[in-house]
Length: 467
Ligand code: URP
Ligand code: ZN
Ligand code: ZN
Image (cartoon, rainbow, N blue to C red; front, side, top):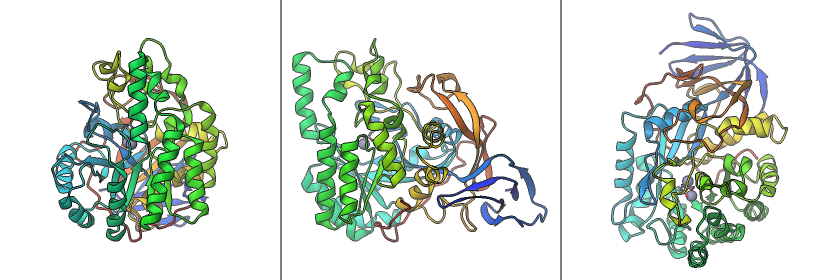
């Protein structure tokens, strides 16, 4: 592993921006400053570029069964796409199979990642079957390096759906175990009823995916999950917040002093319900849950990222092919697999549409993509920082790199991009994972299998993050 000195760049952290060199020794950051010694290390000229902690995406779905099919990205193509976008660590969701243990889910997901991942990774477990054995197993998750579990309040009629009494008990057990509960907050009962009614009327097109999951369905479930967490005395993370109404529930909880970490995703900031109405079933490419919203929600979401009510931007990368997968829902929108790709585009979309427009600062960009992710998800201080002792996961970011998204220049495995034609300004010039060059000049150079599992732990799951 080469010792490196990144010379002449501008370091951007969640706390500030300053000119400094960065010394990398044995895969870790050894020094940050203006007097970094030479001592034979290879000098890398990064003048004119920004040096940031590697981005962390704690919301991905690689090689995941969903809706009768399996995501188009496995750990090879999915993490190649991730590093091409500046992401050096993902935390993916291992799904518990009905009747099996959480440990089995971890083992199965470790098997999927083995020999394939280009970057480091951690695992959450999505609890799908809360048996007595599973209740007893939750406290042992941190010993397996897993400190976060996900509960789906949506997807009624599938094994993912979890009733309130189970969510509440998971919150209680997790509170005592130092495990953070993440919720997919949508009212599954109401969605199931609205879907049934829509199909009975013959309303079968992709736009009905959004119309049967209105904003209130998300806001109600968000408020309910927060209240359940408050009653249990547990911290909570609400993932993929899509609209002002749901974000307001989080703001109100913060005003009451409740620890709720809110995450949104780029698709809710730059795409809208109008994309679901595209002709010729093209809207199916934009089916994800919760759904894309009316564009009037975008500015409120940006404001809440700016003011700290939302502290994370994850991708919710869940890629399917249009051919053969999204097409399963022709004539019945409920059969369109939910999800879209975004792990590669996450940072550049946020820079282009957020930092360059002045909606968020470069420091906030680093916070929501890296440092806050590390704090909320138990990766700090190992990751998410440009500071002595941290692992040298580093993005050298070119703030002026111009490109246009097209499927052909993507690194992922599915057959379309929902961002086709979007202009980007800003992107990674090079990316290091633990001091080793992983992406450079548009090429993924880290081989499959070079990434490592990162055990995660939460000293205090409710720990505050930069607001
Ligand atoms: O549509 C989505 N988001 N698919 C992935 C599963 C989930 O709910 O996060
Ligand atoms: Zn979800
Ligand atoms: Zn997801």
